[in-house]
Amino acid sequence: MLDAHSEIGGKDLERTGAVRIGVPDGLGVGYLAERLSRFAAAQRGLAIELVAVPRVFNLTRRETDIAISLTRPAKGRLVGRKLIDYSLKLYAFSSYLASRPPSASPIICCSTR
Image (cartoon, rainbow, N blue to C red; front, top):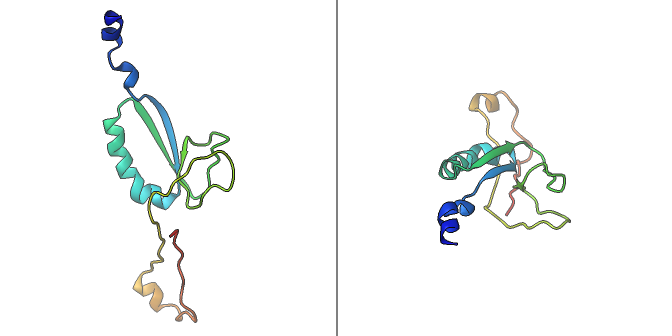
């Protein structure tokens, strides 16, 4: 038994395989990509694929292994939890705004809070 343990010593604890993560494009590119690259460097046995597109992923059809969404799943046997507060903002160049008439009503942004 000692020979077997020394032969496989720790190999079964190594994280290996492919993990596909689906995420909204803004959050994926602006926040998660950099952090995942550091994580992937520390976990050399994992092949991490970041799929950053503006749509909801279907975990049941194995489109991704992990999905980060701006809404909670409505049904299914999925486990979810809040990761962060996330809000969107609208930006424009001052030259663009100067060439347009002022808005009659304020623009109201939404957040996931």
